[in-house]
Length: 98
Image (cartoon, rainbow, N blue to C red; front, side):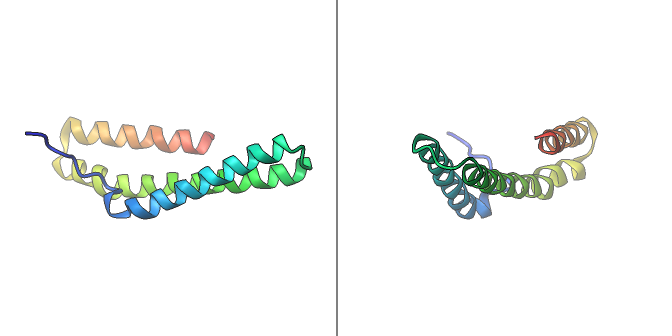
């Protein structure tokens, strides 16, 4: 019997997938612009839009993770809570550096 974990983003899955498909389309558009030798600034504008779209997805995933996984682990306490907090902190650091 297989068990399926419920993740914090499950309730927002459709919206996240929609945003990811939009970002995917933007990245394909950037590639097409490069292939067609479009103006550098126009390409950079589209790169910025795609980056913002991915950042929005990342922030939503982080918010869901904190509200679900980290909150649940914190209520349990102990090493599991410490591990989840360290994991979340590392994820936030990666987002800030990117």
